[in-house]
Image 1 (tube, rainbow, N blue to C red):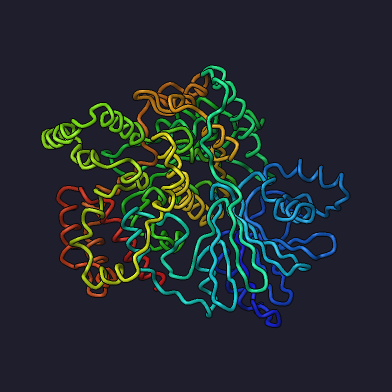
Image 2 (tube, one colour; image 1 turned 90 degrees about the horizontal axis):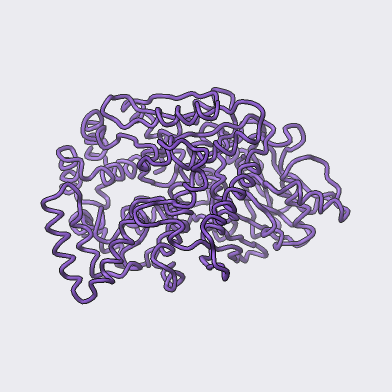
Length: 626
């Protein structure tokens, strides 16, 4: 795992500054403390920070082909590199290292841009073709590894992290008002935008070609929910899934340094551990995190249960409200994009624990919920849509029932009443938002008139609305899984996973997001995934013979960070001082009275925890980057 950066000047006579590349590399040091290198030739400059995982002695980058006409800087892992290398050697290619990086340059020589589709793994890379004077930027299918870029008009600047792009004085770091609005819509930034107006993410499953000052972006992969023409039998499909899990985790265990497992005490991470222990004769190290305070839900007993079952060397860590608060500025610095993701801070601390224990690679269970239907809202919304279809013209009664139950019950069913008249494509924006919840209900009073005018001056489509045409003919579950795989997964969960682990110089691997596994899951009937009230039905069956029943049957929690309580208690003064201070940048966009009301209301009832944390993150982001 590494950090990459570089620049291509459109004027072929203007060289790239060595000093600029040094500045960019320095800002990426945490991504690769084991070494660094540069390649500069004419208008192009490529740079790399290395975290040594495979081929520790001869895998330095930038790396070239035999005659130095193709150069690459690369971040990630190619899990099928040995098979690709054997095929390339049979065709006469000569290798000088044992690294997976070198496979990329020789495969490009052989196949051009078609080589991308042969790569299996997580990756973001930049490749310079000297003969064609063409720069190729590529991001993996799912978006496990990040890649940002900007077009200044005179050059293309790119990097694994935004801060390295900002090191170039020619880059203008102006804020996008629409991105602020989208952040408050979703609690993260879906799609290719960042908070900087002219800095973009290369979309997952896409590549960019830059030649003679012209930029073109192409999609090479998408997740297709096509059903197998044959009749699927559940038990036979379970066996197929077990074999695929075994093969996938085995590939993700390839490493020349110690590999550990990040345990949440849930089904997905325990399932990954179950197959990982088969691939080594040495005890695997496992890690989890808990929180100081007796009232908080604790994942550690379940993680210890899994660790004992599989004989791992297990460690856990406890973090407090003060540690959570003290890391917030660093959280924003490393994340770069505003994301309402309090568990990311827990991920940082547990990753640091693993690094201190000598582990450089961690496996995670990230992605199992998006592949196999693991979130409760999938089940709830499917039930809602079934009720709407069954009642037909009488569905107005359903709206009334939800409102009554919402008033007398403990659960917030009132919000479902507001969804009764909407088709699912209109209200399911992403797992984090509907048009009638969160900030979307508060915007009318929260936004200043001036901010509304700016937004209305050049209205833009919501990022998820752009995907609406692709999901028209899908089942309701597939619509939700597709939207989350294209937005919530790469732009929230995977950004968090990459940035927080790389902050501690740890490589995080996500076997359940192998694209073969995703495509397999997408081919399954809905009732193989969500069946009645059962979630992840087929995955749980595949793991039922080995994963402890207490873990299989428990309610999903993830890393249940008690930030709601902390925002009301230990952090209340910190939140008030940060968000309501006289120099708060929030008031460039929002009503001070409404910001105060939201924070005060949350202190009383904890009903705006996500909104308060998002405002806090946005304010700190301005202080850190602006």
